[in-house]
Amino acid sequence: ERLINNNNSALNCVAPSAVAAASSAATAAAPAGAAESSPRQQAAAAVAASAASPGKANLFVAMYNYEARTEEDLSFNKDEMLEVVDSGQGPWWMARGLTTGRQGYVPSNFLAQAETIDSEPWFFGQLTRMDAQILLLRTENRVGSFLVRNCENRSSRRHHAYSLSVRDHSVVKHYRIRRHESGLLFISRHVKFRTVPDLIAHYSAESNGLCTRLVAPCVRSNVPEPIGLSYDTVDICAIWLARASFGEVWEGVWNSTTRVAVKTLKPGTMDAKDFLREAQTMKRLRHPNLIQLYAVCTQDEPIYICHRADEARQSIGLFAGPGRPEPGC
Image (tube, rainbow, N blue to C red):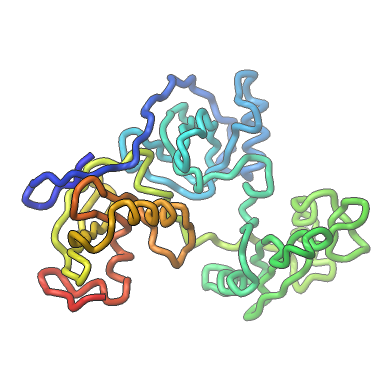
């Protein structure tokens, strides 16, 4: 692959490779009213709609909207049901939409397996108590908004399975969802449930000791970034952004869809093999406060680093404005 600057001069670039092959897919009709039903109801209806429907292990629910970045990608809407055809392409999977029959690559971190707790709109997985409070107290949430998260203390997960966080006016109340010796789940020992969805359904009908009845799942306002630009990184057209002690920074648009920043390392700054080893580690790291690395180019000097453009501007000492020199970082 190549990086191309605004003067159309070619720069050698090694980009992640991918196998671009997709089998043809048959169209599957969606049941009426599926858009209004819950993801779990959609999954059950999709399986029952046709004998040719995929197995439950291959059915996934879209947790967010996704707009295709390339012709090989598949656009989908939140709560849409997808059949995963091939999950062997790392963080990008080949999938088919059950409502449209269309097929393409999708970011796997936008999906959750159907009919599991991960596909529930109120389940937020690994979320701290503090982050739960911040989310629930946002203006888009109201009294009775709630979420379920994993227990923070791993040592107590055997008996304390999950935590339920509920907004009660200007505060957030937290309840432990415990596991009984029989395997049943409960908040109060007087009422026990087979599954977490059963527990949520009960407290959605009546408060029964909670601060309020469960009204609506916490709004997911933070949409995650796809892991990488796409299943296969292609050309980037870039413009000069800034100059730092390590090299230069270019800002551009990849595939006419995604803004990126491309940094260059001055020759001799770092050994290419050492940098590539560190870059592999950087690409595996996933955290909201870490800059997501898209690609690196180490075939020839200078070395190129490609990541999200907005993060380049936020980095301390990195951005000094277009056309202005930067003292360093």
